[in-house]
Length: 250
Length: 213
Image (tube, rainbow over all chains, first blue to last red; front, side, top):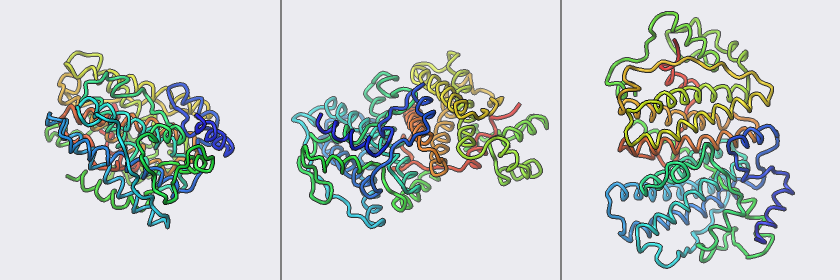
């Protein structure tokens, strides 16, 4: 929890209320009443690279999981194929956007999953649900860091898709509607430090392209905090938006 | 959209002139621009002034969201109070609770901001909405997909970071609702890798048939 502590301090130092501020029920009202910034730190390229790292993790996870052929139900296969395609599209879109705003996309990290993750439907879907809920919280938790409004809007559009994924996995696994498919009347944000702590076990080796974690090093933590998530997709989004428009027409 | 939803029957009509005027008042409250409904030029010409009466900036956005949440809350409250949804009711009851919570959260926020919340509109629904499960589910799906796009459409316009965060936290829930309804209806549960957004005018035009009376 060293990470959390240091990150928290750096977070507070920046005067943010808490990117992860969970906005739920009455808390939403209280939060809104504060009038304080919801979160504020990092450049858009940092945020995008944070998002890109998570999207790389997710896309690789689904590529491996879907290739393992442990899913037999047609509907479930279809849902998981869609999710894989979405995550791949997110990787591409975010990478493109980072380049367009003059940044350097992080390289694809090597990832590792626990033994047995892909040996059964249940273990595959269980971890999938964890990743999706983490993604939802990560995007929401970092939304306040995004400066560019177009990028923010695109990030919101990606965030919503991650929420759809989480709900769909809950649905196909027969999870309880409340608490398994829906997570209450409002989504909860997660602070970057908590997100990174959650996914670090799956990142076997981070690339050295600007987002290299050095365990316990405050610099890294600060970078992590700065790397808010949401993607910058102002530009990136243009392409996706066109695709979305096409899909809607269809 | 309407034709698919309601078997080709036109639903964008008003029962009478009083109903139409009622909608126009409501629509004006929501800040509808002059471009909204072609036929209603006179009423909508006054739109901007009426919109400012309703509230500018973030308050306007909140009241817009409130109006949509009122619609959803009313719709699900009516639907889940009856027994025509079969096994799917278990997925819809939590949605009814969420929408009611959204109304309360937005109302509370407006009150804390010292703003006057938009009045709760009256609603009308096509025949069969609360007796035929498929009609209900398809309408629900339309509301959710519209709601998602409505929230995303306001993202660049919201000024206050806290309000933005709260709106996003609600939007994500609408996304979950939309996904579940799509799955129940055996439709694509993700329309695109990045959700689309819609302007206030577009959204108000989409929900117009349900406001009035």
